[in-house]
Image (cartoon, rainbow, N blue to C red; front, side, top):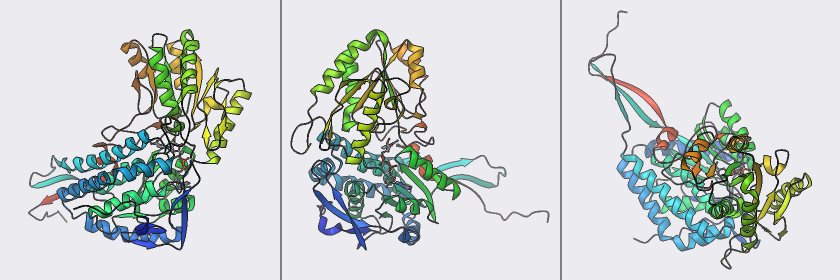
Amino acid sequence: MATASVLDHTLWGGKLFDGRWRPASSTLQVQEPATGEILGEVGRSSPGEIEALVARAHEAQVGWALWTAEARAALLRRTAQVLEENRSSLIEAIIRETGGLRGKAEFELNGTISEIIHSAAILIAPEGHVLPSHDPSRLSLARRVPMGVVGVITPWNFPLILAARSVAPAIALSNAVILKPDPKTPIVGGVVLARAFEEAGLPSGVLNLVNGDADVGQALVEAKGLRMITFTGSTAVGRRVGELAGKHLKRVILELGGKSPFIVLDDADLEAAASSGAWGSFLHQGQICMASGRHIVHRKVVDDYLELLTHKAQGLSIGNPMRGDVAIGPIISSRQLQRIDEIVKQSVKAGAILAAGGTHSGPYYAPTVLAGVTAQMPAYQVEIFGPVAPVTVAEDDEDAVRIANDTEYGLSGAVYTGSVDRGMRIARQIKSGMVHINDQTVHGYAGVPFGGTGASGNGSRFGSLTNWDEFTEWQWMTIGGTPVRYPF
Ligand code: NAD
């Protein structure tokens, strides 16, 4: 049976979701970054509403946990099907709300469907173990049990997939969820999943939506009865979320920022390396946690590499991704654009050479290559989250590893080389959650343990079977037919 459109504004416009779409006391408008046009409005939550919502979600979770694994898996597969049936309108919505290219939108929707299918598939795994028993007449079991109510806080750059990678496994593993998307992307980041699960028949209250800024996010982290929080966003906010979660003794997943090294050795295929480096730094205007944040290039090849990278940067077309085949779309907000510009200007002032870009017009920032970047410059130190490729010279392999690890972040990393042995020797020394040889830094899909170390995260990992560890906890249970009698 065909489902209703996920994006029908008359169903959810100006409303919040707690199993039903309810009018909110105030609303939040959603703007298209390329044009400033209003795309729709969603209900805005107030921090005072969160406790009651968590209590209702808790009740819904108790009923949801009684569903069999097969029934939960079937519901997830139906949810994926609903998204598939809405493919063309969802692709357009992702392009318009995030300012990303069509290819990025397709990647995001496909990845989201894949996250949901994987979350259904992991339910074939055993739910625990039979343990060696201390008493042969008793059965001793280790059981995985749901966490309860899980809070999910997400950013705006890949709002659909970053929500789905928490929401889908949490629901699959019998939890209820309260999702708070970023207020810049609450339709693609919130409404879409709520509507898709609703159409698939998820019981009321298992998935809930709240909208708002830091005050709503903080109220969610602190809410009594909420057992776990998954947060994807900046390291600064992640630290605050982690502190609060610690204070309230909640489990917390933190997936944070990055400054991922992209190393080019003197035996690399430079044409391929420059293409990879451009992709790693300029894809989605560099607004990606795993973006290639520092190009670390062997002195012998740095001039040739810079020439190739500069040529690529200058050849990329810029504009509204809805209106044509462009490589670079808009920056999400004027505030973010000003921040990018400030980092570039400060770095040039400190001695970096502007090899390409450094200009902006309206919401568009030109792909920028900075040469001669050294440790004292902001372009070397901070996550830029814009289309900027800072290039730093390395004297040899050891120096490349030293520079790669000269950061508090540890999300992704990459090495380009003609020798797999050399690449592996270097890759093994890079402190990061993910590393690639002869590829760039931006990768992720549902089947891998995705996550970072250091300031990029607290060691949790999203993806396929690892989700069992993140979204359930262990309960030890013993069972005996004969009541045990003790000496007193
Ligand atoms: P942000 O930290 O400002 O916001 C993220 C979310 O947190 C939003 O929903 C926001 O409303 C909410 N929030 C803000 N203050 C809060 C508070 N005090 N308590 C609770 N919630 C609060 O992130 P951003 O700058 O919008 O997003 C970009 C950042 O996200 C970058 O640093 C990027 O690297 C990171 N990111 C990481 C990953 C990953 O998987 N590691 C993926 C995407 C983005």
